[in-house]
Length: 274
Image 1 (cartoon, rainbow, N blue to C red):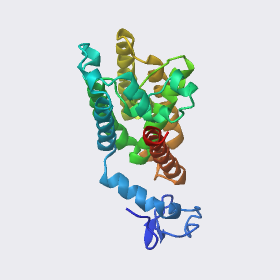
Image 2: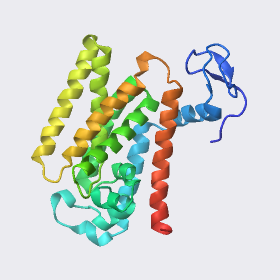
Image 3: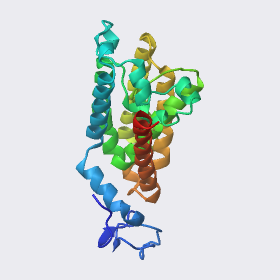
Image 4: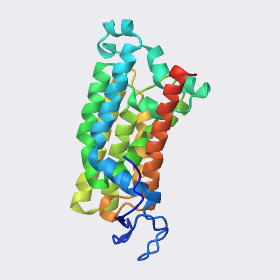
């Protein structure tokens, strides 16, 4: 899919028809309304590929790859590590923590979100993803959802690394970020519907927090950091009812996608070149 160089687009701010190459919208004065031809590309990508499906596919793909990198490790009898990749495999594919970060592996703050340590681990995370993400996508739109998920995942691991967690993986911090976004939405919107969303998001977060404290090996610092990250990101990007996705949201979305691609590119580089 290539950039759109000719034709017309809808200005994200005023909703009127303009040239895709216009430097300034002639109607509202917004600068770079077509994002240098990347705006239509982004919208088409989000329309053709659902967020939940893409994240699920990436998580499953890297889970399979992590198993294939060390097949002998998958036959452990521990329930929670059954069909689980070895630590070496996860390290190679981008697990984060104080140890990888001390070695300069900054990209692991993103890649670790898509890695999982066992069959139950990936099953529950993807199950909750499919339960929560569509709700957030409906309220915020796909572009804002991408920003919230990415920022929450990164901040969750930043917090857990600062708290001394040596080796960690999983999408749960980013998932807590989606709950944080629901709480932010409910508070900002108000009314009976906003109050219902606020309570549902907060109650689910509290239940999952308690569950995390009752289980061994759960990175609760990443959960807390992710929740805060999702809440803050939601305040920055706003929600769908507040208006169209303006330049800031589109730029943050492209930055989130670009950062994710770059980080996985670093994984490939380390595997085959580094």
